[in-house]
Image (cartoon, rainbow, N blue to C red; front, side, top):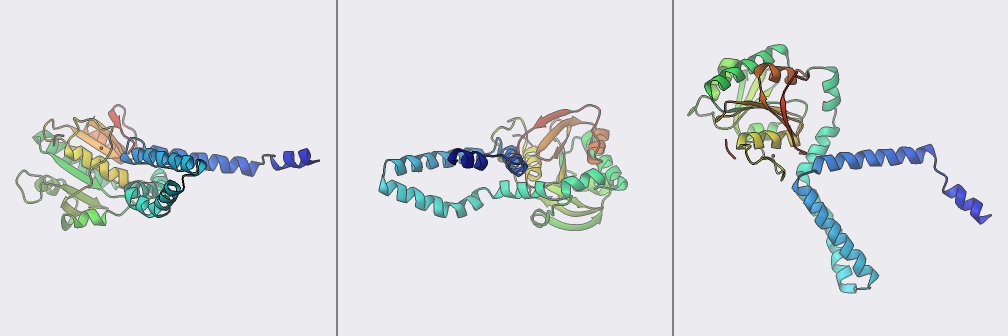
Length: 267
């Protein structure tokens, strides 16, 4: 009789399988977000502390158990600060932006034409630039780090802003809808520890922003005049202007070099 009760308790239902799949999927997504970042190293340190706490509890080491227990109790608040970039990225990826991209284009054809025209001109002239296209996640904080603008997107204006030695050339331009809302804006640098050291500051900043938001960032290298696009924490390099347009329009280009990071020197 007790054996029968035990077997009934161990019976797996479809709800149990569903919960296992959901937890596994969420764990996998979290690991993808922190792969190659400092957060993964911090998780390793937390694991070591948890193992030390378990050993201290088993060996009845009262003082060590108390100190580690207190550290875990109050350390939860510290973790919210330490893992803030990863939490922001997770919330951004869980939002409606990614699903919305499947059913509609975020940028109008006219805006894309102007951006691509500017990218082609800047690349041909060997002028470095970083152009951010805001999507669902607001970039207000980054707009406020630079000079606020309220100008309609045009290739002429974009190329003028990035003209060397102009007041606003150093930094990023942020586009919201069909308007340029900020110039000379400061973007967060990627903290990935697996980055190619040949990547410049602009590329690192582009990847850093796309790790925290769903924005798309076009980068023109000042040294090689090459064009790159950062999106979803991934950097595609050596693109043509038409390939950039395809990617911004939600279509996969026929051929492109791609450099992937889980979450970013020359300029």
